[in-house]
Length: 157
Image 1: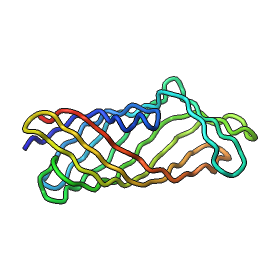
Image 2: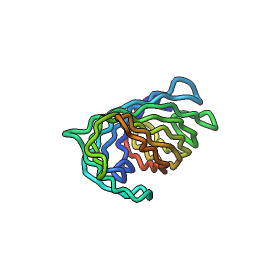
Image 3: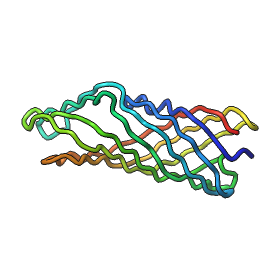
């Protein structure tokens, strides 16, 4: 079984982001991953408390994603896994009644998924999870529940 995987997370597009991850299996059940993640498009949402929040990407909105995967059947990097993960971005956003803010945007999540590795070649991973977003700006109390989705394709070597 290959020990290295390089993937592009197509599910990140649902969050207006691009993510490329390098994963390294250290034991048959455990791997570590890290890679760049950047917000590439603007988006807006209503948080439900009557305020209007408009978020836009800084130029660019650089970030990083990292975490671990624990493979349940001991065939890392192939099979069912559980994965605690963190992604960090530098972002700008504006709250209509507070004005613009800048700071770190963090997502802490847990994901359950499955990754297929076809010999030393093509990989496909799907996963879903739950997490929380946190923003570190002055006077910012923005914290949201998120449901991250992973649809990643890549190459194992």
